Amino acid sequence: MTRSPLFLAALASSAVPGLDPVTVEGVPGEPGDLFEIAYVQDSQDRRWVVKAPCTAAAGAMLDDISALSGLLGRRLEVAMPMVRGFAPVPEGRAAVYLRVPGRPLDFAALVPGPLTVEVGRTLAHIHNVEHLLFEEAGRPTYDAEAHRRRQLSELDRAAATGHVPTGLLTRWEHTLEDVSLWRFAPSAVHGTFTGQNVLASFDDDSDSSTGHVRGVLAWEESRVGDPADDFAELASVAPPATLDAVLEAYAASRIERPDVHLVRRARLAAEMTPLRTLLRALSSGQLDVVERTAEDLRALDTRVEADDRRHAVEDADRSERTRQARERAVPALDADHPDSAGRPEAAWDATQPHVPFPMLGETQAISMTSVLDEPQGSADVPSATAQAPTDASALAAPGTAPDGVDSDPAPAPSPSASMSKDAPPVAVPGGDGRDQTHDEPPPLTETVEDSQPVPVVAADAEASPFEIDEVEALPDAADGVLDLHEGASAFVPVSSADRPHHDSNG
View 1: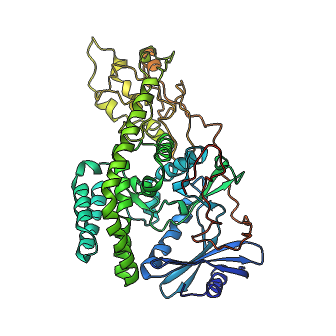
View 2: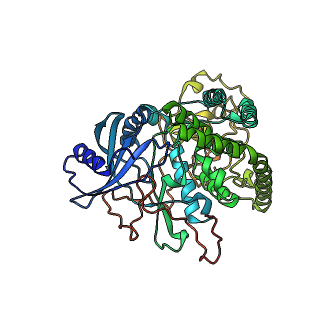
View 3: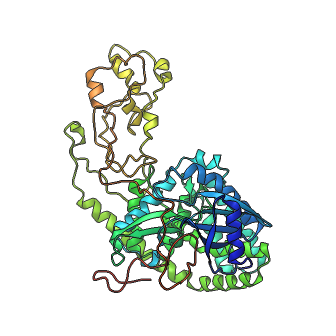
């Protein structure tokens, strides 16, 4: 650390009025770190984090993230750092914020269970955030093609350094040039969704099933882009059953289910992480980091074939579990929709493409343009049938014909198909409630009206947002060990050898 903890404490005091430092703890860094961090406790027993950039580029990232925290902080179910003040440094500005309570997770030791479900839901909740919010905060925005070309550009720059093995360059180039893998819907992305940046609290420290996700740190690389980037570490180190559990919870909470190639792109993002570290180290002149990263890339080159064989087995097992789940699915009969008999609800498959359920906002404001432009029906076709698109549910039903005639009434959406952007998973039963947006209701016949119910969203009684007290004091570590990452208490795996049913992987 080039700056002393006392200097960082002085920065915190100057950045936040009324912050009177009493104690300070410096966080040991590693070569290549973008920030220097210290924890400060003030005279009011509040815990603060001081985060100073090491480079001008890191300073720009830290400066930009303050706008996002102001817009996003109250939209998430979990806590995030809320910047309370800045202090000037040569590389930009140091940020000061209240310390987020919780302990980091070890994704390699995470086992399927309630905590794994919460990780998937938290990630889905981030990806459900509207793009406009990230754009308003000045975060970068990439569509699928721009994201693919950006990675090709990084690959070309890395190839020019001579530090990347030829086998990896060829492997990554072939994957990036296969455009069929890069057809995805962009979403809000955290950017560094690793175990160290996901904080959890436990009702019982000896039982990981009592854990709850409390906060997510390090939003400096947030953007609108490929949702697979946030699965990079999970796809790289988490056990296959854990990854499947996260994906299932994620798919159930997403407005759009994951595309078929999400896991494959996540693995690619994990492989290319050292490449980006190499480029940053070269630009900042950190030659020791360059050499260390080049060694990591050579080691990766020797094991990618073994990884591919292991991933092929994992993918085959996942496909088999999906097939068995579909065979066990019991057809769901709906008394309101006789035509739904014999149509079993498809089992959730987090790696298969699907037709996303429309946003509720799209079913509440009904355009009359299609009705006005609709030709008058003939004597053989009732006029009510020609005006069917004016019903909100007709637009929401994926099976509605382009000309507005719904020849096959759609069944009610499945409970896992409709999700609110800013709420936990919700149940979507069929119902008769409708949001009328017209001055006069359209003259629909009773037959058409009854065959197209509008889904009614009901909140899940078991889900509740976490209420985080920003000034909650964390217990001091008894052994005095300093945290090795930003804004959390001691790093502990979520599973241990003394648990009767799980083996520790961490």
